Image (cartoon, rainbow, N blue to C red; front, side, top):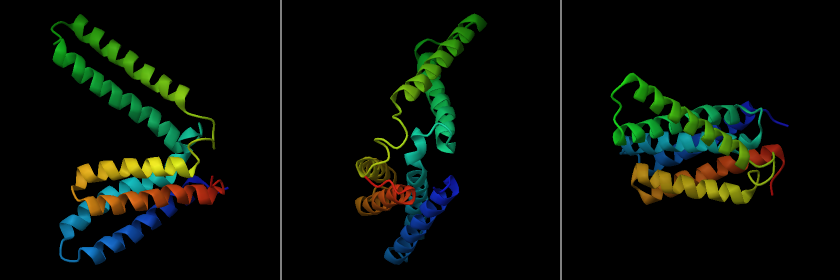
Length: 170
């Protein structure tokens, strides 16, 4: 069974192939290559390690907990402060405590919905869902449908590379 570094290296190798494709397709537009290359790196790298999000001891599972907590905390804080501006210290502490509770509930919900290891997330169908997600996000960021499609395709390949390395292609 390969470790997380093998998955990460395969994701980076797939991204390098995407980068070569971008340079050959847009030789006179290095800004486009840089932008699509950066977006492609994020999606290829994440795709190569994302199937292990259901493994409680994996690096990505532990990082998702932290980032999910922080994102939910910041978003809930921004939402609450914009609606209910805090004036006193007690009000500020109340809002902060409420945001911590909301963020903790989000992490607990994440724990509840994550399937058992190598079930639904370790599948080609999940790879297609990830590819579709990468397509939508890439198109919003890059604003070029062809480049977004290529980014999504290589992101899907990075996701599938994880399954192939694990020998769990379903």
